[in-house]
Image (cartoon, rainbow, N blue to C red):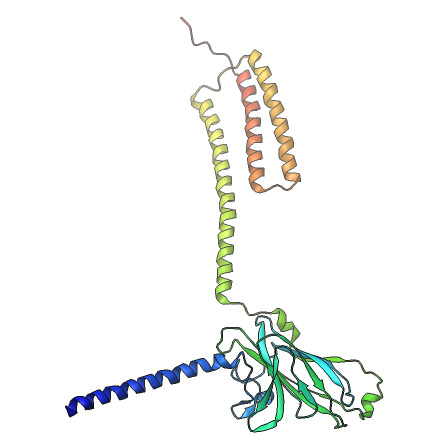
Length: 333
């Protein structure tokens, strides 16, 4: 009895271990999926993402394939003034992604649609903004400090993902650092230029050089081969058939003259009206054929008209040859 109880308890222990391992692996698999739509964590491998970048995407270095920009940035800030800024990221093939923006506790960052506040768990005074849902453009607000703190440094990190839910080399990220001088900066104030500006980082040319899927390229190549085979195959087939027909007619004329005694005689009373009809048809076909060439019709139409024209001309030739052939009397007694 004790042995049976021991075995039963051992089975239950193994079952619990199996369930626990399954839950652990499930959590590990689900974690990245849960993290992406709700914004990135503040810390990655012990360092703030806004300074080191999103190294879980696209390797450990920033990529110039992403053009990361922020518009609506003042050349110098006014005390306590609100500035609406637009964060944008562009990539040749990846349409959506996320961002993190940090102003190093100078002023106040206010999230807009699709963005949220991210705080470090160990220091509630460290505030930054990130996306709350993947996109490629977000509008946020920065309220300038109520006192002149000198230049305010900003750090912006953004990543563009391919949407497969797996952080890999197909995802890319970039970092943009900039600052806004204070109202007492004599060099900026002397410019007398208070226009807003757009600051960006990345290679704009890379936006027009998308890395295409090899499978898609191969499918496109195969489709091109099939199209060329269909078009050229028809051209070669009908051209060859036309040449065979012309050759057969010439061969028939040769054998008729050499072994058949020549073409049969056609009386002039029949040859003249027949020749006139066939000549009119030939002239009409010559005009139609010339029109098809001049109007750049398809090769199929041109080929058909050429064959009909040649056949009409051959009819005129046969009428002349038969009219000139000597009359042979075969019904002699």
